[in-house]
Length: 256
Image (tube, rainbow, N blue to C red; front, side, top):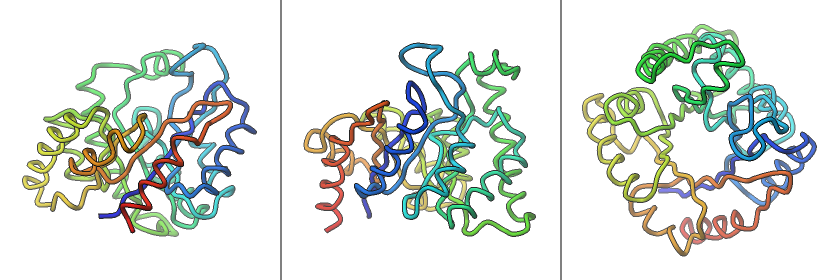
């Protein structure tokens, strides 16, 4: 079991130069993964504040970094044709030398849909679209020339027990939990059951969770509940790495 630390650089309320500097500082500090998110408007603070698009940024990050894995936490499945998304992911994978994680989810932020002309529909419809998209993405990767540098890891975010966790068991390499340790423990057990149904070992799906407390407060119990990837959300324009450095020390201690 290897502990990994990620940061999510929220692409809002900052100039791109601020984000670019934060990316460089995160890689230099030793984080394992750097995420952004896939929205068109800020999720917090001034609703019409500065904001940048996800996948264009990931292409730039692929050139600007040399070691960290990169990805979205998470891509909204609704915003792009699955075959196009597969090709975008394959391209960023090549630019980065095989460091892309494809984080994906069903979508939820209604303003994005309304202002960019997507059909918001219902949660059930969006989940059905995600179920259809995942095998199409994986099939497209097999057809592309050149093929991806590696088997691109798929991260699915969410905790729906009947659908999302089953899709995770079927398709994903990483599951990201939005919740506390009890949520992680309970839904992780359900994911284990779905892995059995899908004939996959539960250990094949890495468990990820967002953290905003010091590792001495929550680290050991989250590890005991199965988490190995810990993500800290960082706000611009400062993108303070103070708490991240504590988690990096925790990682290094655990990994020996």
